[in-house]
Length: 143
Figure 1 (cartoon, rainbow, N blue to C red):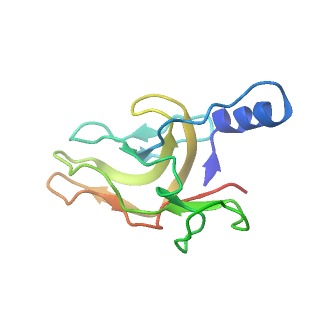
Figure 2 (tube, rainbow, N blue to C red):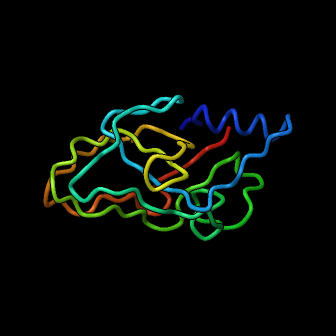
């Protein structure tokens, strides 16, 4: 799990300089067939009914720990995980092999916040069940 350059720079400017980093009104989870880097890039899935999935931000969308505790992240080592399943649309075309995910502040385009590799790559083809991260499987770590 890594922070994007956008988020790193925004946090430094927000905490130590005079600029403010606006909290996103919605966080979107995206899937990639070629992993992005801190600078962005990668190859996000496109077509075949694919769309980013909105998840929070809220204390009910993200747990303070992977164990399912909600509330403030005190004592969690900067860890949060999805509180409910994150379900993508069912594919109507082959999406390819998913190798990474990222979070963004917009449904399309926007600023990447975090990105990470999947533990196990997943090939998604036309007619497969809707891909999903089960509750607690999508973890974000600040540390």
